[in-house]
Image 1 (cartoon, rainbow, N blue to C red):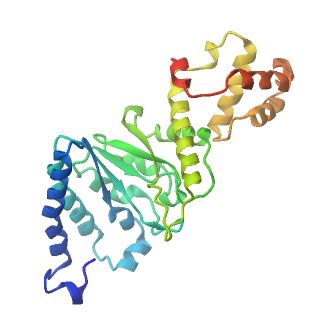
Image 2 (image 1 turned 90 degrees about the horizontal axis):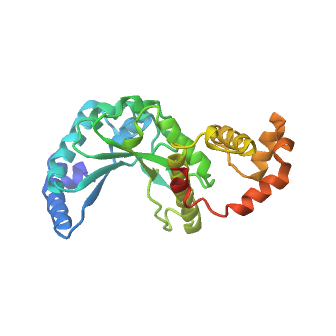
Length: 289
């Protein structure tokens, strides 16, 4: 936003404009809190760009350490205005027409994230542009992780099984109690950024179903089933889940054919009967407990 030719008279340096915005944001936050808001999320548009070396060159960044420190200082100057609320911060790498503006691992910025006084840090991790989950090995131990499990830039619809498997993979780095699920970014349909509303709904539904599945799997294993056929079926579904594959009559039957167990449990007729008997998974977590 700062321009050397047009801004210098009011703000001699780029940093001057940034610091001038702090009291404006503080006033806005205090007003929101005064109206009863108990949860506040800030959008941080720069740190996720800094992870991309090409983006740094494009933007003329000469000292990445200085830029990261400035981001942390500015955020920490604003956040006290939100005292008494649950705070979160979303790191946005920028996207336009289903394409990210930057890409790269969050590993570079993890030490900076630890210095920001915010409760939850929301990271876009469903997209391959984020470079994988390995960066979470350095995720701050005192913060909650907003785990991106839906890629809003990919028009392919995620399955509940894929969402649950992404949660399972993240548990290798962050304990379950500190993980919250989110789409990578918000769905904001517009002429400039066309996102189908039905697509957004189906993706969010998959996220909710995947969250329920992940919670249920905390409590269930094959030894809990009375009938051997149900134990065999659960193991087949677990194999599909671990591979991040869709679980339905076709995929389950194919898996059981490969193991030679399909006929032993009653074949496709048995699977169809179960499908008719359980019309919804809405209460899966309750029954799992």
